Image 1 (cartoon, one colour):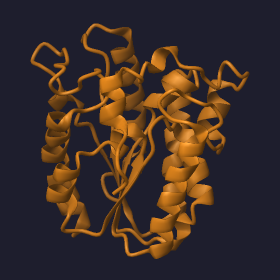
Image 2 (image 1 turned 45 degrees about the vertical axis):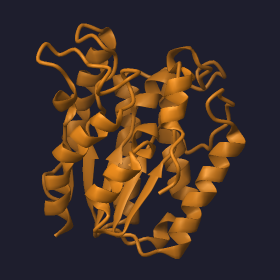
Image 3 (image 1 turned 60 degrees about the vertical axis):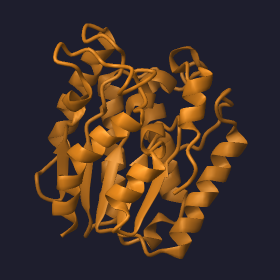
Length: 248
């Protein structure tokens, strides 16, 4: 699995996504940003375009080597798996992590189109994507949903025999009363309609990251967006039984 930059970036305070430049600033509509395949074009303090392409090339090398039966696809939340937890949870399978920090659905679509993805034959794809559309596309729940739907459609076309574990977008922001929390709830309600319970299994593990009053502890997500090692252990404990079932 590629070395994650997320923990270092969080510690350095560089993931101020809400104030980062966006594709909306460049005149790209939220729905076009969400549904049009496009590589990374904007330089961010926490990741250069050059670094993005390097990470993409690393994933292509994994794809060209083949031999992947469990494929994770997503953004920084997927990229940032703690190595020890990853090995313990998924080491018994031939697992690959295709998460790249900052990616929105349009970026993932481009990577699937251009990364030799059709060479793989995974049994299961674990998809977690969409939160960056709010930050980088200026998107609302409807726009993000169209992007997630496009990614699911692309994965189904690439891997018709694979199952897809479609994760709800995880909650972010510390307070349960944050309007952004409500956006996530609305988005996940829409994403849930993509699951059929058989080949596409939708799961919302978000409540496991929250306190009883709905707030989020920094012990679970230090920046209230990216899981800490404790947060990844929570995610693994929640998701692993479903992965084991779907990998049979």
